[in-house]
Image 1 (tube, helix red, strand yellow):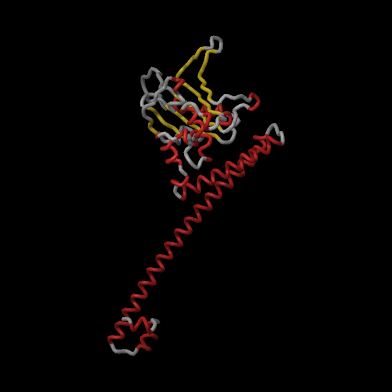
Image 2 (tube, rainbow, N blue to C red; image 1 turned 180 degrees about the vertical axis):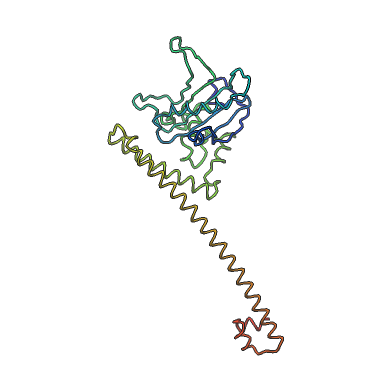
Length: 296
């Protein structure tokens, strides 16, 4: 965050991670879930969104997201409307405007006076990272910011830390993000997400190769279908886990009941033995084997 906001002369000392589900006033608002929502020591708000598939109205979405961070600063009663700065950051795995394809990786945007080309309001900032435009190899990395961009784009494909990234902060990042450090559930969720993304990306790449101008709109039914199938698969996995858990519980209960029944049979056999009843009769009455009775 500090590398990204250096151009803003920002220096974050501490971040507090807030609940990423926004509880708004309407039904639509209550469905808003940010990928990351946090606040720095000055009370400034940061919303971070990661987008793999193209969003037709992502600029509108960023503006909409910023409204939550602005509205929650409202104070009841007397208030002079002074606000803390709000930043909305989009890390995108696509180019925002394909028709104006360019090589811009990071873009900082604010409200501006279009005649004087001056910033009208400096407390509302929209930042986009168009990751397909970052194509530096590990040998070409010069700044810390280059390194962060490289890691964001290539982390899923790295099985070791490149020499240029062998510093304390990146070693910590690789440790946290290590696939081997994930729990079984985390690995399953990661693989499921990766499969969904790869299927979607292949569909999009195919559509572009065929030269379809309205590829994304035409693929929306496919996206929705895949999403529905993914939700159903998750539901079935959860149900299977519940059934497995219930089966284990029943098996354990049956084992305890069998142990208890066996204990009762042994006590019965001991009682009959003490009455000097012959072994054949005890076998017939208890169902125990001759060896089991002789061991008593």
